[in-house]
Amino acid sequence: MDTATNPRILTMIWAPSETRTANFARQLNSPLYFIHYLLYNRPWIAPFKYIMQAGKTFQVLFKNHPRVVYVTSPPVFASMCVLVYCKLTGAQFVMDTHPPSLYSKRWGWSVPLVRFVSRFALMNVTDQERFKEMFEGWGAKSIVLENPPKTPQFKAVENTEHADKFKVAVVNTFAVDEPLDPVLEAAKQVPEAHFYITGDKGLAKPGVIENAPKNVTFTGYLRGDDYWNLLNNSRAVMVLTTYPYSLLGGAQDA
Image (tube, rainbow, N blue to C red):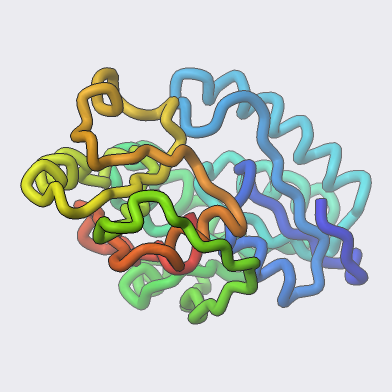
């Protein structure tokens, strides 16, 4: 949790970290709760951890008694827990819905639940006009809040590794919409360059890391100064997605 001075507003997300939500919490001068258990981004354990996270969510809400809750979705179950709290206490909530949960195959099953919950929200936040119109078509209030340009403050450290190479930072999380195979194939074609690919290596498909070209380094998931220094020391930054309406935020967060 981040300490703050406005206990009437509380911000939460079911994730170990998330820059957009943290930025809004800072602007709202709001306590921020990252509620998360077990491994991240592992669908097979989601039912178990969602039960644990729901319990923690109610504990946080009824302990702090906020009058307004800013909650990020997905998963929509976080917003559903907040909705229950608001119905019981008369509080209100704002739901910030990340667009992939509105059109990706992974989250398609949850769209009816998002539609239901959105109608009870004081406001629905999204980052694109097309999704604002979607919420309004459901009879819900919505506003567009884009990610502002970011100038990170970090301690610069020069990376002298592969100093003779053209360094390329590939912002990657091993998500289904991130085409990694073309990047690895391209690396084979340009041995004079060195590719640094981010992302939790535990999420990589079997054989991807072991069979990668020699001019590829998998960095693992980077945070804070480590991430910004990778970008700062690279000659090029690559961020790819196959989702048609996804905003590429590699310069915003990892």
